[in-house]
Image (cartoon, rainbow, N blue to C red; front, side):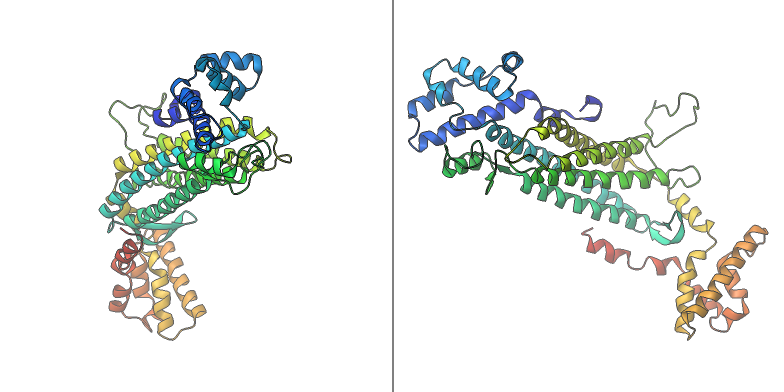
Length: 437
């Protein structure tokens, strides 16, 4: 991933240097397991442990001739060991024993970074949700005013979604924490399952119950799908806050730093560019998920059609999601919230968001649902007509109190009691408790 959309810790994890360090660790663990089983002289094992190293540039030089990255690596290590003990390097192994097991180590470490990111994001969301638990705003369905909610409740919904994101990443970490040291076609013909188990255990992995030349790619597809789902959650909330920053809405706003510029042509602009950036990056990860799914179908015990794609999509997706989560955390910590605009927007729909409460009150008075619906809809349409006519009684409560048919069932005091903001928000505290806020 380009540096613009990645952070140092995740970049380092997916660097060539780090990958080869893990390869060397696996090679030495395999030799150690063989020595423990009495299959390799202990002194040779100690020679390898003390001398084994590699030079990245030498590995690249060898690969240009050999056209095989693992053979280039083992050749480089053997050169630096410069001892007959080097014959035990890669003994009984196939390239994918190293590649897939190292890949699992990298994915687990990447998952740990992402899990930490989500936990920090949850802390930021929780703080803002508690701050605005009782801040009323309008709820919207189809982009149209529906009924009141609180801004804190909206953020509680966000908190709950990223709590699920955390669970997904934890589950994905568990799924992908699987290695294999089972040889060329997964039969353990040259290294026993006991050797495999010992190596995997020391790496914090479990051995695949059964494998071919590789760990099956549905495992990795599941991991990528988890990343894509978390990215989709980031996109969902980035989109929400982009809408809330529209000039005519302006209930929240992405913070605008001192000295920042919004447009090369229009000096007045303050755009939600960071939320927009997150929206775009989610699309990239979603595309990588398609590739991961296509990697599941390989020939027989293995081909390498998946390999070239994986070298791109997994480092990219992990780096992008890490960047996205940390960026969203910063946005939430610094989000500008305008309660007065929320109240203004509540008033734009003339109290019509009380319509369901009035309809249900009429049903309780004995009307059928159809009768109650027709009465309330008629009064609602009258309210809009009064608004368009510029009349002073252009609000839903006034129209209700003036309506003779409504008056047969509800008096003015009943209407006032039913049509209160407090009524709509009376269970917000309960919802907060249910999500752990």
